[in-house]
Length: 146
Image 1: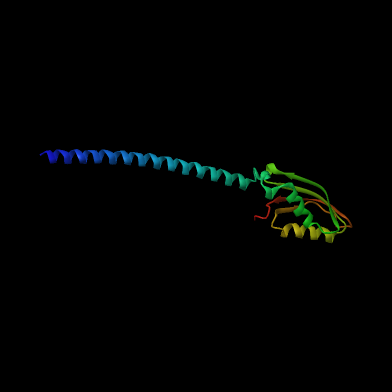
Image 2: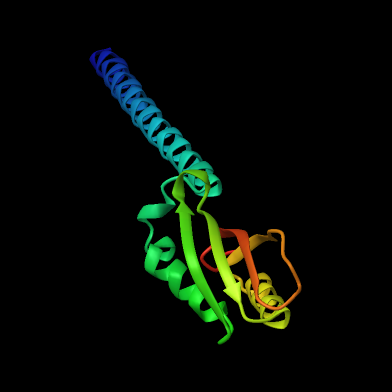
């Protein structure tokens, strides 16, 4: 009989310990799930900001020096950049006022910008095809990511 009482007491203690461990495991699972949810929300927010171009100004790939270097690489020898505006609040929108000595230099500039993986949405402004071309080009900076 004493053995039966001890067995029942042992089973009771084991059951109580198992319930405690189960409750602890459920609490750890809830904490882990909360952390996963927090990190997922943070990742989504960062992805949305990156897609919108917000905060990209702090990224080394979108520094003004990189933007200017990419534009300089696209300029043919007989073209020059007169003015540059970079708007980081609108997903790194670029406005370039350029002058080329000839329409063919203007065409080469536009082709180079359109082929470059660093620019998208290249949109030239109005142009006069007689002699020197003075115009504006709008584009978006991607930094190489299409």
